[in-house]
Image (cartoon, rainbow, N blue to C red; front, side, top):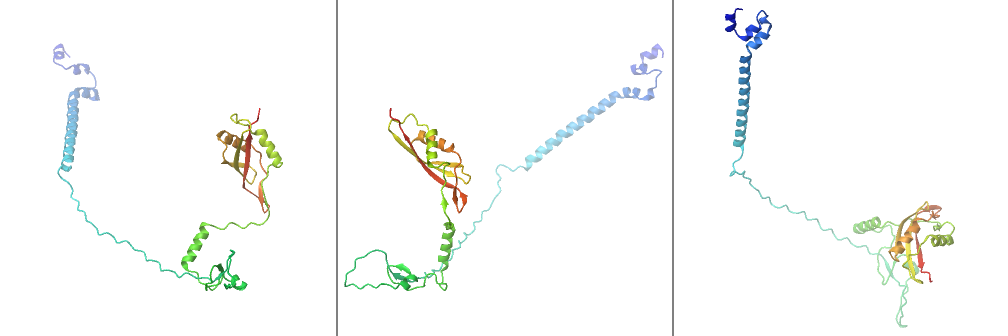
Length: 269
């Protein structure tokens, strides 16, 4: 390349002189400006399209919004009040009248001229004891009819107040190991008399506690209080007691409550 050609030749041609311009590097550098302009135009186009899309969406949302003065009309329909179902009044049941014989355990003074009818023992055994003679069904008669109301009331009372279980056999009360003397000795050795007890003054605390089937002590409760300090001291010592010999019913251990009075006496100097 002559000096005159160098003055009118592009720098890129000078660099790639005697080199393979068809390889790709030459074409990339030669078309760089055109690709840059194309990329800028495409980027601006995408940006403008995005801006116009956002504006269109905002305008559509604003148009779909309800105007401030517009309100949806709701028509309220008042329904007629429902008539409450009135329960049928129960028919009065005829009360069953039992046979009653005049007899009383109260002592009364009667004039000699007044006639007194003494009922037969057979009639007394087959009737209810009362203050006058009334005819009716014999109590325990299998043919008598019990009104439904009386039967329901009886069943309800039996459910609310169940009959206590029938127990047979000797009941053995719980006992402190060694007997009552050992219990008194234990309390005397472990109880500490509070300082505010005056000489000669007596304070009695009545405590109740539960002796379980294994002889353990629980559920301590003050029945008669002698003061906060005295109650606290009694409960402290009761909880330290060893296991008792539990109470028994029909030869089986049972849980029983035990009430123990504890008396503090002030020592006279």
